[in-house]
Amino acid sequence: MKSKADAQTWAQQITEHMARTAGIETDPSTISALFTPCTGRNGETAADDRYVLMYSVKSSVPRAQHPDAVRKIRDMLTGEGLTVKGYRESVDGKPDALVDTYHPTSRYSATASTSGTGDRMYLRVTTPCLLPPAEEPSPTSKS
Image (tube, rainbow, N blue to C red; front, side, top):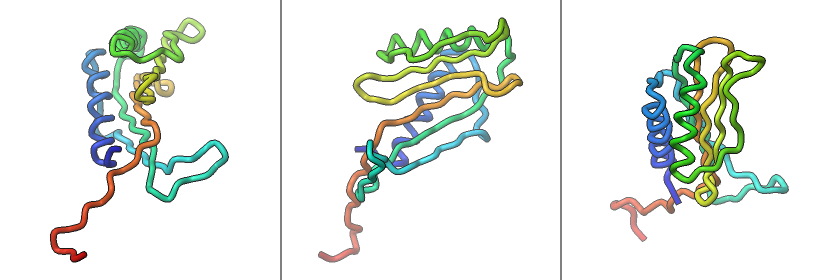
């Protein structure tokens, strides 16, 4: 159970930790927090406001440093119990880095990757399906 505000703060803390680990700075103007309803295997959705958060932020990093950045992030994330689902440092001999990880018990994913053709790196956290806490009655409401 987690409020949307708490989930976004938590995801931001993880991406900031990833950036610090890699020695890079994020660009706050590129933050994206997308909340979507949880969808079941057969396309069903619950009526209790369950959601998934896809949180991302970008950073400008010289392209030649992308492999080193994802290496550092990979080592930190695996040290914190995440499992690597995908990893690369280059494509066709050119820096095009990616580390995609998943936490087996908390079921969130964390990704760092080259974004596009320039010097952008993309840091992303995706939560599992989360249930917001029940709203408490306001102090002025009557039962």
